[in-house]
Image (tube, rainbow, N blue to C red; front, side, top):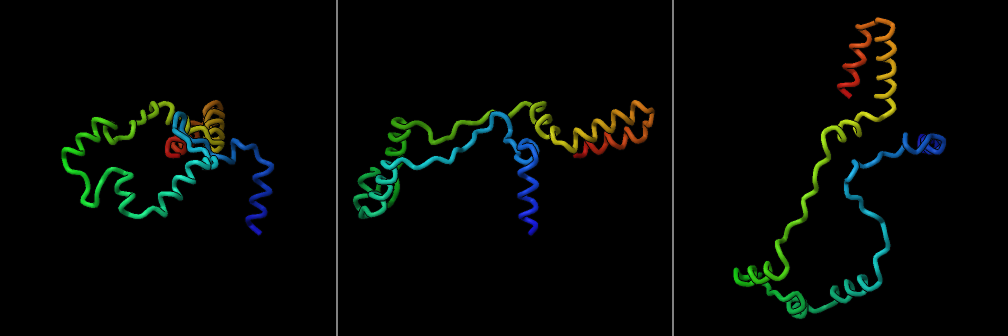
Length: 131
């Protein structure tokens, strides 16, 4: 019952209030179908005998020795993922701030400050800073 009510509520709200956006510049994964050639290759590898697998991947059960490791590094490069640059602090702050609750609190804080209720404005500013 709760799920049905929540689903109906979500349908009527703007998507920007319901769905969370990833951080800007963050790499996103896309759900796409696996290409048939890749599926066929994986299935072929899955049923391949062990000895043939070792030959296919140009290795052996004991692993690679130092000379083979150096040769593989020269051929393929370092085994490292590219580093992702972190977002600037102000972008991260904006992404964390821009939710309806914080915007509402900011408006209420501005109204409190405009009506010279400095204590309420201070409390609201503290609530925004904490959230």
